[in-house]
Every structure is written in structure tokens, then in C-alpha cells.
Length: 239
Ligand code: NI
Image (cartoon, rainbow, N blue to C red; front, side, top):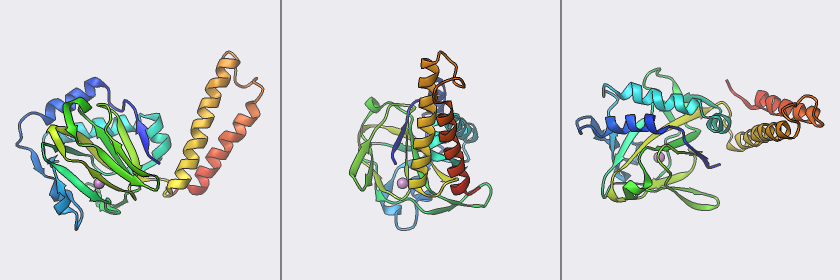
């Protein structure tokens, strides 16, 4: 599942992050430092050092915003996050076709994290740079993704993907990885469909019944739909 997440960051949060990222170059490191074995040669970008004094605040802003985003929570069912990476691609920089590492050691806890989902949050406007699309390959072909500032794309970490070369301007983004409570992409998709259907049906019924759900015609069906969602989650979640 490729899931676009609209407006993860509001303009104020985004501007705060951009202001920090564009202040001087002293805290940018070669992106190869965090590339997986065999992938170093393909990765040509800069990443903000985690030693930057503002790093923790920026990372917390992004992770808190993600946890408050209902579509993200429903689609990802996150258990653990890797600390975000803030990346910069200048003219001529790119990241060749690769698959993300299956396992990481979380730098703060030392615990293993299995990467089920990858996420890219676009920090500056698509008009600010040419090229720089995130291209994700799946069974249906290649998808070139370049989103509005503040929007994000969530995609299975199992897929091959690349970042096209930037032809002008500068591409700024945040990336992170999620271990989900539900390992299987197919099971997560079923849960997300059920969850969204339940929420949308409730909203429609509320409108039809002038806000009164419990006395509505299909209150019992809604309860059974919700019960199915939670009981499947109980079966499939690995806490
Ligand atoms: Ni990647």
C-alpha cells in the first residue's frame, strides 16, 4: 500500500524546521554514514547530524505530528519508530535504486527494529526544485512521488525505490522507518479498510440521523463492523 498523508506538518511547524535546516552547513554529514552495506555507492546526499542542538526538538515535532495524524495511525499501526533523518539533496545529488535494511538497532534503546514501513515527509515546496522525485517500484509499476510541503508518503519497506537526481534547487525531506504492530502489509491493508469504512459510515449516518447514531437503522451493523476490526487487530497485532 502506498498511502499519501496530507498536511502532517502545518506551515508553522514546517517553517521552523526549514529555518533550522537552512542555517549554515556545519551540521550536515555525508548520507553514506547511514547507508546499508552495498548501498553506500548509490547514496549521494547530506543528512543533519543527530548532534545538532536542535535535532531532538525537530525529530519530536515530526514524530508527534505523525502520531496525531489519524490516517497515519490507521494505516501504519506503529509500534516503534527509528529516529528521523533530515536529508538534503543539492543539484546532481540522488539516491540510486535500493531496498531499505530489514533490521536496524535503535540508537537510543539498543533494541532491534524491523522496518515494515518507510516514510518520506516533504519539507519544502515541489516548485523549489526540479527532479528529486521519490520513485517506488511495486507489482503495478513505478510511481514517482513529489508531494506538497508538509505532506508525506508511507510505503512498504520491502519495495525497491530511489530518489531521482535533483536538477535545480534543493530538496529537503525527513525520512523515518516504522515497525508496525501488524507485520503483514496485506493484513494492515484489511484493517485500514475496515477502520476507514467504519469511520466514514458513522459520519454519513450521523448526517442522515441528525447526529443520532444509536437510534439509527444500522447501529447494530456498525457495532459488528467495529467488533470485526478490533477482533482482527487482536488476532494479528504483535505487541
Ligand atoms: Ni531507502
